[in-house]
Figure: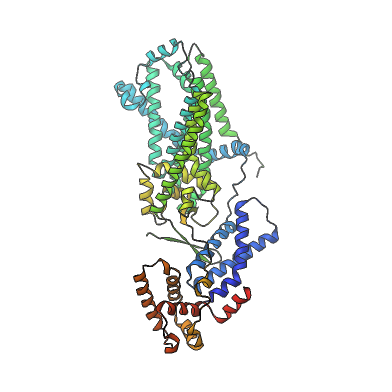
Length: 333
Length: 261
């Protein structure tokens, strides 16, 4: 049997038009409140249009009307069956003080793993430099790190002019964007079942360990701490958190010990990945400013102890923030 | 196995399908988007160059941040603001949607756009392209992670049968019992082929059009044998038009249509 298409369209057109208008309004302003009557009407229109789609699919193969109805039903289905929280409203303070640290803590094991891979890289890089100082060019990609640390310290401390004069802001912007790109890449490599993320973390650790041992070996520990701590205590954890997000992605892909499907595992973590990487972005903005405006200035301009103390305060605050901020008190739902 | 449409079954038992976009169309949309990004960057560069009057340092900083923000933010902002579309996707009638038909979430858009850096490796979205070729739902890595798909948007137009069929005398209707038998004997798929052939008649090459309508008319003539006075002098195309009119429009339907008009 073939339905009378013309009659069918004439009869049902008003219903489809009403549903389409309602959907357009809902999509344009998802926060608008719907009264119970309007919700019931919306549901009725959806069910009727869905039934029309079933009829036209069964009794007519006219593709245009079917596609038109499929499109309408698909849009209405998404609105009616969506159970996830509406993300249109964004509360920055709540996100900063609650959502972000809570998300970090919820997946802290991935952070520990990220830290472990970086520390393994540090150990490798440090031992490599300790046992074979000639390996420096192979381990460090930055030319300014290849020279003798003692010579560099002497040059920095005897410098009379400001070598970043007139370009501190642009230097900070370059650092922010470069580090954020590296962090995003570290996260995205989680799609390689975590292999790429682990390589990135390990390699970062290798460079860090190699530089640290090189300066410690040269007796420039204080300079090293004063140089790296002000920005490093934020920048390095930021990269670790990006690694945490990448490993989270990898865990969802692998799904070891989880009964849910790949799609539901990925669906479950995508919000957390976004939260973590946005947090990383904020940390790197701060680190970029500090590296450009503070870390590059050494004694006698700024005493090392002051820089180290500043870094230590930052580290304590970061630790407290990530460990305590937004913590639910006993009795909170 | 590769599929071109994604079927979603609602809890009410209704199945609707979405046409998946192929890698080539997606690459073209991406190419258009890259051009748009380039234009935005050029305009941003021009505007920022005016800042050099105030401070070269600030101008360079703004450009570095602007370059990064436009590259990362273009896809995120447009897909969020235009419900899964960018300029390239709009032009090619594509849309990002949730793989299960739900409302597209902001975090899904962010994740799929951030993972472009892996999909675009080593050059020209090679990783993403190969992944979408191998993936049953044409998903690149970012789509897999974000649980999204890219679909074609159908032309949201109701078929206008009046334009096709109205105002013509239909000789087949003079034999209602045979017309009823014709309706009974034709499957929906056959009726659809006839309707589509008529709707797209202007798109065919003239010689192919004559051959196509001759073949179709012969097929439908074999379904019901109308008397000679009903078919005499009817060209193949007109015969097919009469068949479609009989199949898709009953007398009751005409009355309803007339009343509505």
